[in-house]
Length: 121
Image (cartoon, rainbow, N blue to C red; front, side, top):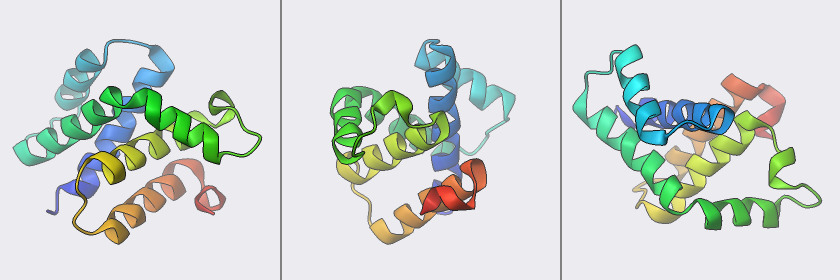
């Protein structure tokens, strides 16, 4: 399953664009795949699954983030952090992760890369 860490990053970047631009998610997915020349079918499939799972459960996931973000409204959480959390929660709650420790580790690495080392704390 070597493609999963990359698919997680892809899903985060697509969701980040959606959150920033507000464009239709399916268009953003196709644009991202084309622009990044993603040829591995398993990677594309898993990225789509992650994004679509979040979209299907977005209300519940955002409520969960808000509930556990003491004194923080969901809109006050940074775009990067918010969308990494969204994808991570979608995967952990709604897609059977065979090894949750690896899944969580991948998302921590994404947070460190895109939001800085202190973000992952």
